[in-house]
Length: 279
Length: 102
Image (cartoon, rainbow over all chains, first blue to last red; front, side, top):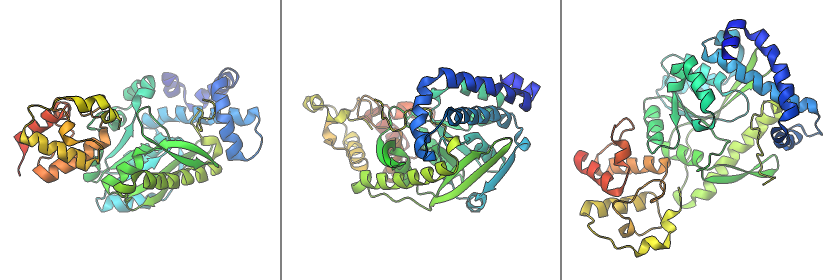
């Protein structure tokens, strides 16, 4: 598929996404069941198979576009960037920043912007064991991208984060998905409690750096919108009230995530039972 | 952050051969991370992460900052011995002894 994407071109490869998405729509009942409650909440109306199909197609299209982005073909995309000055101001002052993202939209479009900024070191904190095949493919496409990943799980992962920030770099974290050893905190998301990782806000408070949210929304065809917004100049959490304050900060994140989900409902790429309603 | 320090069996083990520095660093660990465990009960050879004391990588960062402040030893992520350093209280203290500036 990657070979085809790069040699046959984007339009022809995109044509393949239609049968692939129909196949998933027909065969992947579990993912469809999982995404249904999200769509009903985000769209505020009953949903049809078209809504489900659209979700698959948006996801497949951004995944395909990641191939082009990693292959250094970012210029083929029309990217509308809002709030970039939030980053450039801090970079100019040599201030490291934490960038908090989510599985709403494309992460790689934002990484591309980050990596094309001159002289800015950008790292991504990730639990890569999720998708070793995709990791290996992407490593072949762009070793620099792969080297920018800090693997969670090892004792020195957060030391690497701190050192990157101390050098004035940026570290991206996707703060909406749990990995198995995560501590969690419950936040209201579309009116219902869902678990979010608790470590993100606690980490941010230890690092004393500005926290900026980002969303890389795919708008169809070759158009992307990237939003950066300031979340906090510094997150301060009193250890004595740690659980409560972590929850409050994470709730603020969940609120902003919900806000952006409403603006781009079809960009939600958490294809699992997010509210854990069926366990 | 696991909860293995809640294991009641741990508390019954005898504490032996703990050096003064190890006792001091055990206190630093408990104080820094506000663990609900008696520092004297931390076994020097017990793993700090995972199945032992149950620390995680954010704890490792906080601990590194505290060690840097107290002993002037800056633990760096590219240190080839980093996994060994964080293996246990004893190995952590060996590293502090070797590199401390205060």
